[in-house]
Image (cartoon, rainbow, N blue to C red; front, side, top):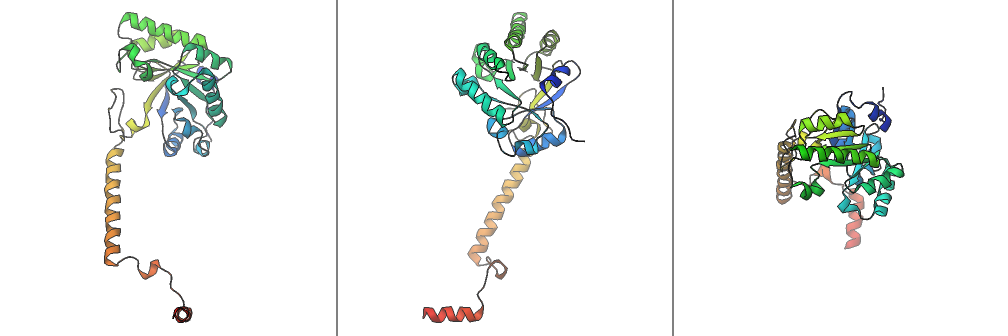
Length: 264
């Protein structure tokens, strides 16, 4: 039976009843794989969610897209962006901007997802790219931030690199959905990047990531095969092994004779 795409009401009703799955995907192939694998939620760039084939390959994925507040511009720009991606098929929009922006979008009935803990675009305020909430004071501040997002009208928030005990206690105390990236299993969804799961990430591998495949090695193998094929082609051209008769079209002999006579 075809799976139905969850609504926000469905996601809210599932709070506290187990862990949903969430991936960051970047391509149509990854979207199709997530669909077939039964992943619940995906985060994806605007150019993918607006691709004309996206919903063809991913009809039941609850799909969040967005840009950081540094990329969007004014609040009017953000509103315009939200409307464009929602019209294209997005189910929710990520917002790393201020609470006033969250509240303004929520008043327009746009489903907004906030971000707490380690927020890369705001990391300078929390000491850089490191865990947030490891002291009692910072954990309480994190709880207050989550409550503020909920008060502003966000229905969910990514909670990134926060101690598992803190994330679990916050999740118990709010109605906001918390999507955990390195914040433990006490939240409402587990969120990883597809490139980490697939082993195609050649850069820094976060502590919370888990590698299930080695696509990097496969890409290296394919690249070596690509180079070898190109070299073989170049060698065939140089030795006149290509093209063979099967690769070309020949003229009927009578037509060829007439053509040559005309040239003379």
